[in-house]
Image (cartoon, rainbow, N blue to C red; front, side, top):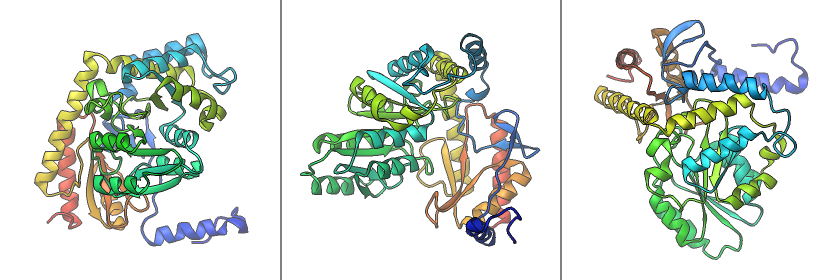
Length: 402
């Protein structure tokens, strides 16, 4: 395919790379959501069952969160107008951070513009050249990028392999710089849960800072959705807890919880905090309303419904013969192997009325392409029954199931 008329010679290579993706049947167009993020949504003009949203508890459309957002616009306007260190720190920003710290049972909290920059900005801030990062091989891209930006030495252990992790820590026992042991709480592509208690044991044994990215555990695991630290009873043993406001919380942003010294240090050294405008008041108030809900009986009911739907869906997928890998959470991959096949599977599912996004290399390994499904608390049982019927029908047509 020839390049568009407006493509300058300096960027011709980009068009050529896109053509390669088309030839390999790996090129994907963005799907467009029209209207609200719901269990049954309108995407590209077609009504489909939505199994690709991180909206675990359905809070993107919750009436209480809408009301809080509208009220904040009336009292605080639509924008903050500056970075946090100038005049962009509003009273509601501080109130939200204090609320999250109480919720997570930590001394303090700082909110970032996204979960990605919360991870990347924190790792870059607390480590530097001469320090060491020991990281699970399937940790999120934001952790990987934060490590690169920090210029610390990086050593990777096989996924959840505690023996190899300890071998690395033994070999580096005499390391002169700081050491950080870091893991996702729930791994975003496979949906399995980190072995946090033994990792905390290793961090303490080898004098490491312990850090957990709990993006996909926030609102999902632990009492009221407090995450893997609460799920495993590891309060006081994890130095840096990262979470997100963009998934189960239903809004936008990320946060870091820990000691008061950690948060004060991030105020001074975390570049995303220093150089990004703070959250609009409506977003901040929405997050406040979400944490109030999570810390209530209504929040517990939503989490129980999420897990009831998850268990039902997983059980039926396995009964049909799908390979769901290591999943222990609402993230349930359907692994098909070949990326082109996964993309075609996703395309045909959409045509039948089910949106389940395909994922291939480099997001996952070349032979681990998959459809990544996520059920929510707001899916009705009939939605899941219909989704399973479509999955079975299309999978048999493509010889994914016999």
